[in-house]
Image 1 (cartoon, rainbow, N blue to C red):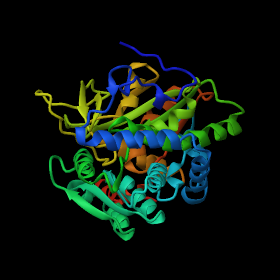
Image 2: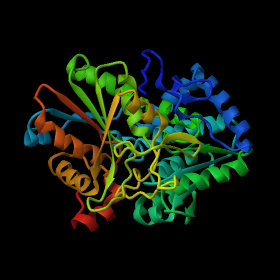
Image 3: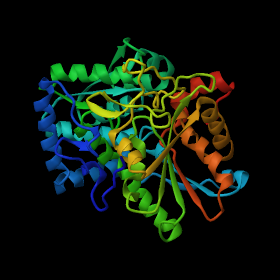
Image 4: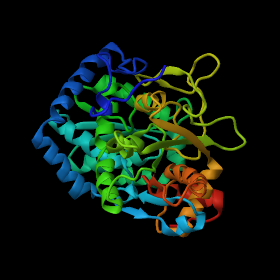
Length: 410
């Protein structure tokens, strides 16, 4: 069954009374103890997103704290090397802290203050969501606790150190795969017991509906800027334009695509294909995964033969998640976006090529999107445009890159 995306209506609002997109994805599959906190947050956010004073405050901090707008540049050397399409990048990694996660973290801290909460808790995989939340919490006077898988703590050491410097309490998660999926689970369990005093920030467009909405609404700043920058560069939105974004939980892609939803722009999401010689991956949309319930939301999710959440593997901690945002499931079934995957090896090669030719150093997450751009560009005409969201800086991955490639370029 396919669904239509309604024009002129924000994608985050295209759900039914049960908060389901297309009647299949999303919703609030939560314990009874969370119903009131979720309802209260839903009501508060509904008011704040229409409050001119709150919007003015958000825009002030996006400009003066986050550093909006982030650069939009042509990758001329990479374009000349590959031939074919013109390749551009929205360098969101230039935002304060080095990644797109700062938008969501900033908005959540503003909401926490409006709700009168003194504590904020969050999850992280690559460490960027945790790093940004620890930064924003410090900025806005909140006590911060971050749940992070023990495996990710080891492989994302630079961001762990940054969180500690910002005064955050990092809670290692040693259950399950010890990665992002388990960090989200433990974070939600903690919030159930502490929701009276604590606000929860889900790090991506996953979880119960309200967290999907807040995150997508926050990162939409990326495409608001990009729309202006594209029109300044081309005079209008080009007829043949492709917007490429890595997809794990899906927050940066939702922010990157939002303002272009009613245009002819083609959306391509690139999931983590995992190691070439492994059957494990983190690409539920690319590999035909079935619908299941994960973290309070119905979505396509990697499962084993018994319907339990399946194991994943990716060199990229930020994409190493068995599910995917309900919004991306909706976009896939509506055929508004296409999804593919890149392997660990392809992402590493893309990192090498981009950092060699251009003055940007993408983290392993957007390197997956650059891998697809490298495949596509030579097949296209020079009149066509590819824009990649370079949503994270490689600093957090320097140890992994050195281990895999023997050197690290910045």
